[in-house]
Image 1: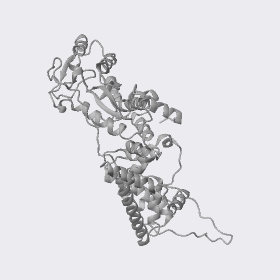
Image 2: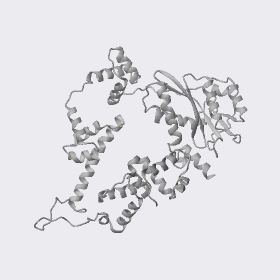
Image 3: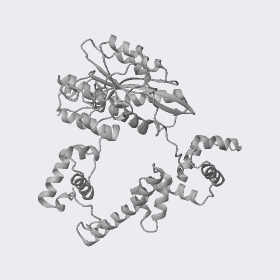
Image 4: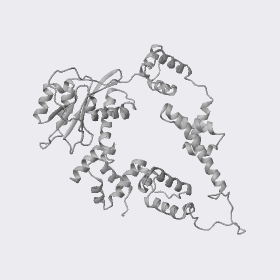
Length: 453
C-alpha cells in the first residue's frame, strides 16, 4: 500500500464523515483497499489524531496476552482489536494469536537484540532481575496486580453508581484509601493520574469543608419541599434567604449529597378532541420504508427550560431515521407546524409519493394542514386516539434526544439551547450510528444506498 501523510489520511476521513461519499468510492480514488480506509476511520473515532502518530513500541508479553484475552472474551476480530488498542496493523495481532496457539506463552516473549554491555573487567553489568514468566514469583505478582485492580474498580463502580462521572479528586481519594494495601506508584499508574495531582488532593483532605453550612441548608430545603425542588429552585430559595450561590455550585453539591428532584417532565399532549377531520391510520405501525421520502412521521414535544416552556416539532423519515427538519417555538401555535412543513417540502421531488403520519393533535386536524398535504399529493395518516404506539418511532426519538442531549447539558439561555440543539441534530443525522443501519448514521446510510443504486 502506498504511503499516506497525516493530512491525506485526515482528508479522506473528513470526506467520509461529511456524508457525501462512501468508503468504497473514497478508497478507489486513493488507490487503496476499502478495509484499510475503514481502519483509518475507526482509529480516528477511537483515538483522534494520536492514532496516526508514529510510535516505536515494544509490546510486553503481558500486554500481548491482554489483547488476546480481550479478543477471546468479547469475540473481537484482529481489525477491531487493532483499533481499540491503537496497534498500527491487525497483522501484528494475528501473528501474536498464531504464535500463542502454536507455541504457548513463551512464543509471546520479546527477544532481546544486541549484546549486553560489559565492564572494564569484561564482566556483565547486572540489573535487578524481574521474576521469570511462568515462575511462582511471576504468578504471585500477577495475582497481586489483579487483586489491586479488583479493589480499585470496586470503589470506582460504587462512586459512579452514586454520582455518575468520576473526577481526578475521586481517583485520588481511592488511591489514598488503598495506599496501605498496595504501592502508590502502581495505584497511580492504574488510576492514570499524575503524582502531583494525587498529592494536591491529599493535602485538601486535611482542610475543613468550607461548604458544610451550605450543604446542611440545601439538604434542609430539599427535605422541606419533599424532593420537589431541583437545583434551580433551591438556588432561588437560597437567594430568598440571602445566600447568593451560583446554580452550578448548587447542582454540584446536590449531586454529592445524592439529591435529585422527583418531578419529571410530563408529555405534551396536543389532542383537544375533534376540531377537524380525523384521517385513517394508513401507516398501521408499518414503520419500514423502502426508500427515502416514502414515509414520514411527526409529533410535538414539550420542553421546560429556565421556568419556561418550549415546543419542538420535528419530522422524521422512517427509511433511515433521519430528522428532515424541525422547528422550535415558545407557544404550540399552528405556525410551529406550518413552518416545519414548508421546510420539509423542500426535500421532496415530483417523483416522491409520501405518506405523512401523526397523532390526532389539533394542528394535524386543521384544514390548513390537510390542504397543504393535499396540494403536495401527500397521503395523511393518523394514530388511533390515545395510542402512542402507533407513532412509536418519533416517540423513541424524543426519548433519545432528551436522554442524550437535554438532560446531560447545561444551557445559559434559550438561544444557547437552540444553538446546541442544532449541533445535536447535525450529530444525530451525520455521526450517530445505528445498529439497524448496519453501523452507519442516517445520512451515511442514505448516501450509501443511493451510491449502490
